[in-house]
Amino acid sequence: MTICTTFMRTFRHCGKNTNKNQLMRSSLYVCVVVCFCFSAAAQLKPPIDNWPTYHGDYTGQRHSPLTQITPANVNQLAQVWRFQTGQPQQIKATPILVNRIIYISTPDNLWAIDARTGRQIWHYTSPMNNAFHIGHRGVAVYKDSVYLTTPDAHLIALNTNDGAVRWNVVVADSNKGYWSTNAPLIVGNHVIVGVSGDFDNLPGQLKSIDADTGKTQWIFYSTPPPGISDPPSGGATGGQMWMTGTYDPELNLVYVGTGNPTPVLNGAVRRGDNPWTCSIVALRPDTGKLVWGFQASPHDTHDWDAAEVPVLVDANFNGASRKMLMQASRNGYFFVLDRTNGKNLLTAPFATVNWAKGIDKDGRPIPDPNKEPARDGRLVAPNESGATNYRSPSFDASAGLFIVSAQDGYGIYFFKPEHGEYGWAGADYGIAGRAFLRAIDYQTGKIKWNHALGDGASAAGVLTTDSGLTFTGDVPGNAMALRTSDGTTLWHAAIGRMGNAPITYQLDGRQFVIFGGGSSLYAFALQ
Image (tube, rainbow, N blue to C red; front, side, top):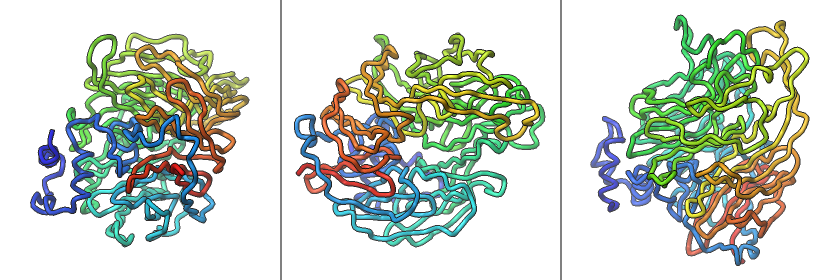
């Protein structure tokens, strides 16, 4: 498909108010980025000189075609610049790179920096608020605007040139307990953004906002909003969508994972499976209408969101060509779905689990009643932080490996009726946990290799490249490069605890790898 053909096909996603002549006159870099992001070839790899979306592209694979840094020379990586935010918060955001400018965020802050030197171009600070400042995942760029969510659940559009505010709109009411850490997903003129608030008995919502005007286009609720009688979720609320989803342009479907139901540990007051909490849902980006849903944890009582990245892969599965969706879920199970209809192809554990007594006919784990939180406590694996969490996985198609930061852990879960029917409604205590990087054979669910990362859970995501390298971070605070084929460590550098996923790009003939360590951003390249 030619660039021009791809560009023209994007118009059907651009909304009724888009002026095609204006779009044609956009700068060349915007054309290239838009052509890449909206191409009908959903499996295109990220461009080498940009990282234009949270996952690098719409697939969520976090895999780069770059090959300058190889297993043979990666030991020559050296730091070339460091950007210090000066903020107390750890960097949990994925850097976004467009037109040689990196956009990096922490709660209430956004910086534009030169991707070659790390020099600050501008800095924006949002108005003070009393919301939950737990972290921030990143931003999105469309045309000449950059979009930032705030802890008090606002969405702000800024000018990419100078950080000037274009508009500031409320996504959800922070006074009710909503907050936001979300990196928006842009599909056409839809800025798709989710919120958090998964222990305040609030209906989960995902909102689409017009990229030019800031007006709400649609809202998808994962559980019924107030006023709906006899809700099919059995009275559950929750299901917040706080991680960035993925998109298939050919099917015109957005995929997003949803959070846990509330009250969190008191399942008795919310009968049934509680759809669509702890689920993967497929939505129409133009309307927000649900096309299908798959529930990873029916009737969850352990705070195991299924908000983890739904990774899109086109490949053979059991001898047949498939459009697949893969997720390593917080509950300890790896799922492979047919993303055209949500039908399960494979369910397999990728970490220590003891909470399920089997797999049902639809590929969903069957909760064991003996592992429900109880007055005298129940020993459950995984623990509340999960077998994985927000840290992004990566998929290497040539190796056939889904690589995820995992944890083997146990926790003790308690519930007392007097704890009530609101919020957490119980208690849990993690008593053990060890972190591993695991490579999963997506055809079988088997673990091909296992690399220890330290005690507890790692917070670093994963990046793979065509040269056969896997980049991530360990618990003690090392940035690392491993050989993708077998997990052998080839390089490491102490930068502080990583809370984000690395990215890579090539400018002026030089490949850079970017890591967040503590509150600083580090750039490495070959000496």
